[in-house]
Amino acid sequence: SEVSGVDGAIPGTVSFSPFVFSVQCNLQALDISDYHLAVKEIYEFLFQRESYYIWSNQMPGIRYEVYPKPFDFSRETEKVALITLEFVVFKGYAESRGTTLDPLTFETNKWQIGMNIQNAEDNTYVFMENKFRVYNASSEMINPLRRHDLDIALTAVGNLRMTNLTTGDTFQYNKALKKSDVLLISGVYPYVNDERCGRETNHGIITLAKGWN
Image (tube, rainbow, N blue to C red; front, side, top):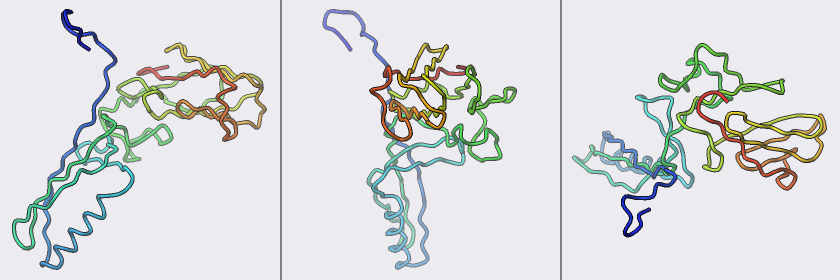
């Protein structure tokens, strides 16, 4: 923000604005009837009521959640048209196609070079110990307050307190858990056995810094 009479600007938290992902395509039909059928199928395929993900073969491990912008066909002949498809990446950033629920191997066809996947370390995301390390391969901090996906499921006996020593974040559940209970922290919302339990917590949020936590 800028203030009259003050040099420069006051910095704030940087946020990523939506942007447009463009693709150019050619439509080659068999005849005039086939052309109109193809146009109908393309519109029905692209325009859906919910957002969806797209990715390209140049960056196969990275996807964008989008909705399409209105477009028209630039008809060159009776059977040929040029199309410029534009998709709004409304989140303002890309995501990996794979998650930590997928094996961290290239054989899954969800990862690619340049995604900070560690080769030398055994990256594990299921733990039986009270103290453990979690690797965040993202290019930025994972913060549920920014609508980043982060689910943490735990089982314990008694009161539970979890602290990320790297970020200083602490989550605490104030009631005693039984061995059969499952505590799920899904983003900013905690659940015990699929029932909301926020009032029984310290309202803490767990974030993950880049790299090891």
